Image (cartoon, rainbow, N blue to C red):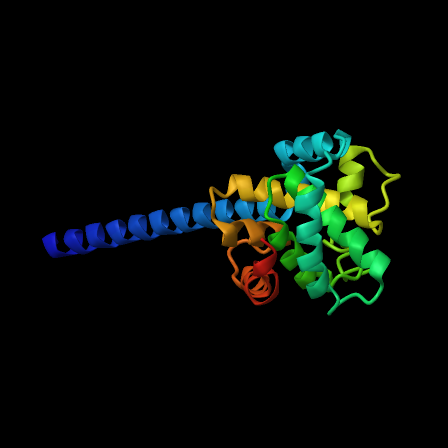
Length: 208
């Protein structure tokens, strides 16, 4: 009888332990799914939306002409690998220079992101609908009430993309890998950050 009661208690303890483990597992999965959904849907981040709205309302500040010309000269030679058109090349570089300085972002990093995202094709459109040089998703226009913005235009696209990148850099406390993966919507995976950092080291590092 006593042996039977001990067996019964052991069974009950095991059952309760398993139930506890199952509950914890379900909670963990729910939290994980919630985090992934949040990371995959940046449109639900009101601070990012506010940052974008403020950026798009600002006037681009003209930087020191000499510093800009020095940077443009060095970066222009490298960009010839992707773009033959002198006017387009200069337009992209001027836009990247001004927008990156406006957002306090390394322009070399912005160039590396553009290389990986679109290979400097302003007309690039991904399977998910991301558009332009920095592959900006059109839902941002809806969130900001700016349906007239053309994300294929170089200045518009780079302004959106650089502001989003700057927000993630600031929110990642210096963790460049995390910031880049958030920009790409692939947080927790390394493939995209590694590609950008490789492009940065291989081609754009000297433009800093």
